[in-house]
Image (cartoon, rainbow, N blue to C red; front, top):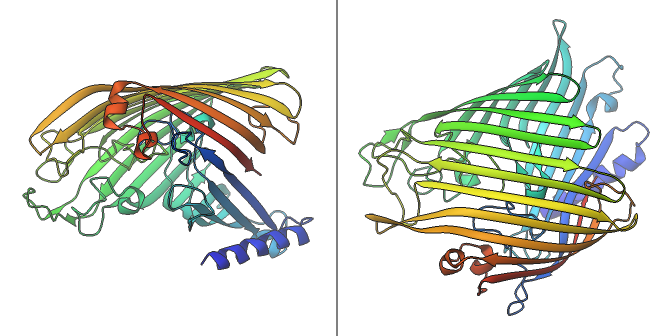
Length: 450
């Protein structure tokens, strides 16, 4: 399979070079690869953020990862007229290390995008339609690698008329998060979810834009295998409402969002990388439903290229979720309520065009609750992390902007954990076998996108 994928993208790349004048084929990629150490018994560098939070808390210790994207502009290939529909096919692979070390050790690759995209006019109405599997999302908090508002990545379709989009996404949660109540062995075949989404963008003026979103989630009937449930088949539903405000002027951009979801749309669960609302949180009740469950997701993110000497970006993410009222705890150590807060700032100092200094501070607070023995729960307190990073950066393009890439970075991060984090091992740093109240990370990392 990997050889076929490699051949495919070599073909795309050669085709792009051969027909660059017409732009019939395009090749794009995003990736990060490097070497690292935790400086504790010389272990491979482990993420310092709190457990199951993904890159919330800072992304500079993320593991190796590569995306390769090939695009075929079919309207160019068929030499269609300029006023004809614009048609493209897009294919993206996703590669990462399967054993949580370096990508060269155990590379896992899969197709994450495969869709047809058409811009056309029907009955004098301009439309944009895509069908397939797609990274279906909008704004990203780059500092935390967190798609903050409308991440509906999955398989389905989207239809846009003007500034309004309706979409249907189907997600088999068993593939997205095995530890989720809707995706584990309690269900015969995983929990197939259907998400209908309606989004509308309202441009108030050149500087202000509002994005509104509504979602309705539903499932088919699924059989439960655990004896504590009193039903053999169950279906459920959920809903979500959200709004995001975008402010952009000169070199300053700010995004702020608020989402509220209920029942099976109370996500994000601890899926580690996104705000996907269909990864719901908590436990169902004895009927296998999520009556009373809800979740809140609030985000803030700004990027400010202040001048040619320095720039600043920052973010904050607050999440609260609770499962069903009177829940059945279907597994040990699965809480029914959580909240977490992540805050970060990154000043970038431009020492010269090609030599720059990245400084970063991240703070994380996580309410840690566990359910033990199926009868009693305990709340040991708040897990907290303070993390400081110093990273000299070589920028070969010479751009003095926060989002310039490629980067080659020498990264040193120091995390200070409280006793709750250390005692219960609430970080990948401890999961890798490290110890103490201080976490260390030293890495030489590359990152690119084009």
